[in-house]
Length: 102
Image (cartoon, helix red, strand yellow):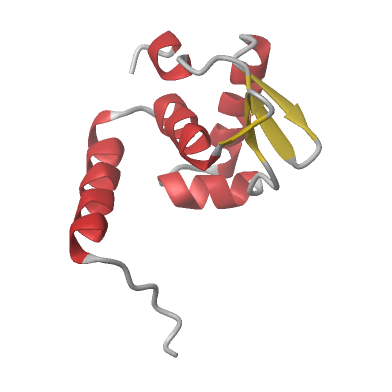
C-alpha cells in the first residue's frame, strides 16, 4: 500500500471541486462551519462531531491558520451555534452556515 486513498472518480472530482470552491469563495468561518457539518453525525437527535480533530488539523483541512480556526470556533460558541465538550463538538444550529451568511 502506498498510503494514498482511493475513491470512485466522480466522488473524488466532486470532493475536489467542493474544496476548490470553498477555498476560493468562502471565508474561514464558513469553511469551519461547513467542515463541522460534514464531520457531524446524528446521535440522539443531535448533530455531534465525535472525536473532533485538533484545531491544527482543522486548519490544515480548510487551508487556514490554527489561530484563525481558534477564533472562529470561539465565535461560533459565543453565538450559540456550537458547543465544544472535550473532544466533541455539538452543533446547536443546523443552519449555522446561513447564520454566517455564506
